[in-house]
Length: 130
Image (cartoon, rainbow, N blue to C red; front, side, top):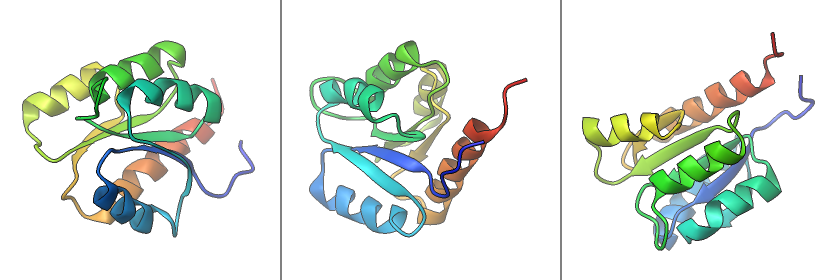
């Protein structure tokens, strides 16, 4: 079991206002260990920083959040990725889960839902392997 008391989160989002809002929501309960605005940098940054959870915008420049999720999962099948999007529908959620995401949420959701999803992924990572 990890001695860490707060989940380490990588945040991949290209809109500065959304970044600020997410940082305010996450800061009381999570350590944001990195910020990425370009989809092409997400997988490499996740590999380098080893966050417990990567929160990735679906629509990033250069490489989509879905493809970034696939790349993260290819490098580390135990990684946890939560995709966020402004335009949520069941097709998006299905694609996200097929890409290996732990969850997919609307950016408009309540902050506590995102925190709960991060904590849930963190707890999965903290469970001993069988």
